[in-house]
Image (cartoon, rainbow, N blue to C red):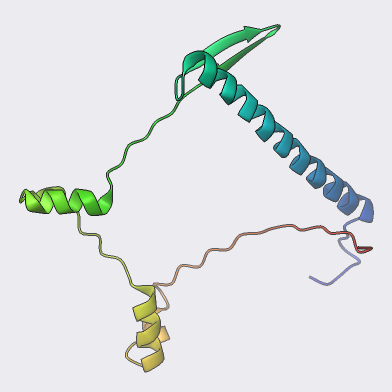
Amino acid sequence: MNNSNTFQIPEEMVSRYAALNEKAKKIEEEMAEIKKIFNAYFDHEYGKNSKGEERIGAYKIQRQIRQSESYHPDKTVKILEELNLSDCIILVKQPDKEKIQAALTLGMLSAEEMKDCVIRKCSQAIVVKPLNK
């Protein structure tokens, strides 16, 4: 897409994007600092990892606590195996990327055989930097 007659991005738009991106970074940093203060307040007033709510002027500020639990894989599997509860253990079969690469390199496996198995993920990122630095 190198046909500049049909579509162009104005320099003003690039400049605006760069300025907004810089503002966004500063806003995120300031919000992170304010959140630290809010959490310190709620820790002091309600206790660590406790929810709380305050009315301040025209605002209501709440701290919500979300918890998730999971089992430590190695420790849990060891205990379940010791208790002969192998039904509580899932064996997950997944490809070993390093061994597949080695098999491809050694010719034990062809790229053709694996072509429908490869998942490619792409992500886009826009980076704007001033040229005068």
